[in-house]
Image 1 (cartoon, helix red, strand yellow):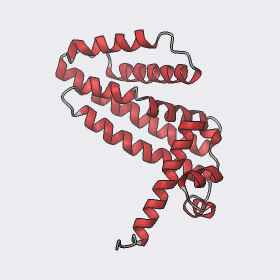
Image 2 (cartoon, rainbow, N blue to C red):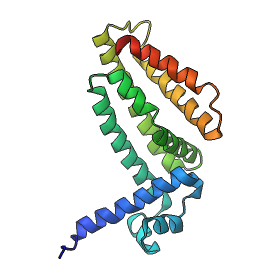
Image 3 (cartoon, helix red, strand yellow):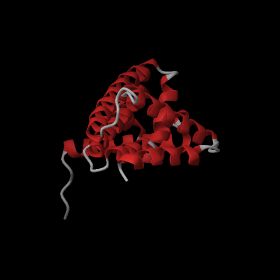
Length: 192
């Protein structure tokens, strides 16, 4: 006989199921395809539960984004402390599911001020974290930070990844292979 989950465990499980369903729908249908009815159906829950945990849809989207952000921060820390930090950070940045969902959040942010505020703060923190991490890695590898300023490289990478994501979403991948190979060759110079 299995014990029933405690109230806290059940609440955490329900909340996680709602967030999982939201993210899955965003990946499959884009943020515009996410509705309270679809989320609860995907999660296998009753519709009134969604609004118990998330009174407004913006609350749901923000919670899903913050969970994704926490996941990303943990993965970024692991990549940065790995034996091949440039390669692992690059792999994290070009992860297709993450790129797609971030693209959806960015699109949503242009229409929803509450989401825009959260994403803007997150993007600023992320850019600064990537720049500081690249600075430390460049120093360790002897990469000239005057020729390759970490803040500029961080922003260039963010723009490159955003461009690749947008192209992929539009079905245009004409120059992706060349671009990815070029970045891999640059990384190979320092992490063969």
